[in-house]
Length: 192
Image (cartoon, rainbow, N blue to C red):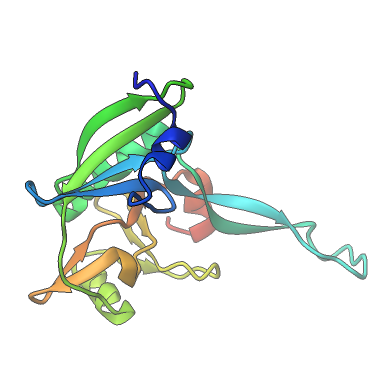
């Protein structure tokens, strides 16, 4: 257990870099990026969410809810499975480096991964890479770029230029959200 909490860490150094999911640090000696989850969260994962639908005319033919694919907070196990899938399907080198218990009892997971260099890939380059590597592009109304790999039973979402670089003609996906889709996602996306 560390003897301070997350807010104290944030206040300790204005030079720290925080993203949506992580505190991000670069280890120049090892050429690796360290990421520590923002407690009490463990990254994001897709889920099918039912959202209320406006029905101004009280038309009984309009369903009360609309299903859509959104991001929710992942559990620690889902977070670790995401990075294990990255190692498996992208041949990445993500390592769990620590489990941090803050003084207030909350937990963070820390990982490290290689530092990737290159230019942000275009959507066309991302689609070409995934398709050529055996992934199926899954159409979705949510605006997410989604691919499914039937061989690994892995869904890739958030495969965007900010998470995929091109270097020497190769795509380097480094922060794509991966998951093994549950039955609700399989049904919603009509995967089978």
